[in-house]
Length: 234
Image (cartoon, rainbow, N blue to C red; front, side, top):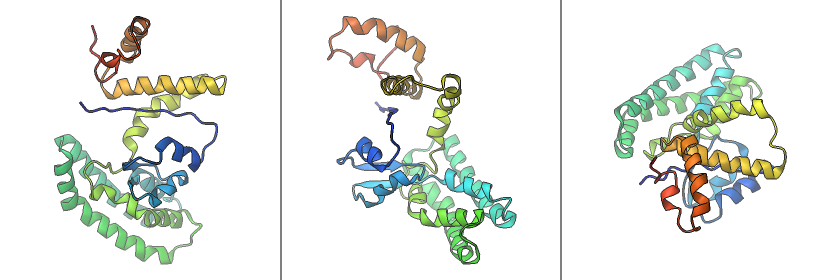
């Protein structure tokens, strides 16, 4: 069984210390982030391979269109090619191994061309201009941005999770406040359950309606069949 699990964590602070606590000191594997500075410490952890988000890098060039259209258009043209390949991968339903082979064949040459262009243009730009910042961001995070060329499990961007949580982000405008820190922690727990249901194709309303009736009748160790990835609607 593939355990697709979503976890929302509430904390009143937003810094690398919180990220460290959430990830834990013993975690080994791949972590893909949006490139926010709070995850910079991951580069120093030998047990972690840090994947970046080409969606964010691409967005920087979209923002710089008004600053330098020619250079921005060139970068965006390359990104259109890359994301088209990823759509092909998705449409074919390729396994991670086959996905990696296709990327090495088609995406790697595009990324090589992109890096060569970035290294040439960085010396012609002013660091504070939007196009300068876009180029510097891509070069500064090149290792993370190219991890998808080394491992078929890594996505080209974290757009997948951003699209999944978008309804929650939009919904915040309707209620604005959680009432208290404890309320926010409980809300994060509810979000975790609902989104995990969504990842497994489970109707969260039917699931919660059933589980909340069952829990008072169960012992703490007797809940395996109530987990979202095991649950079957009666």
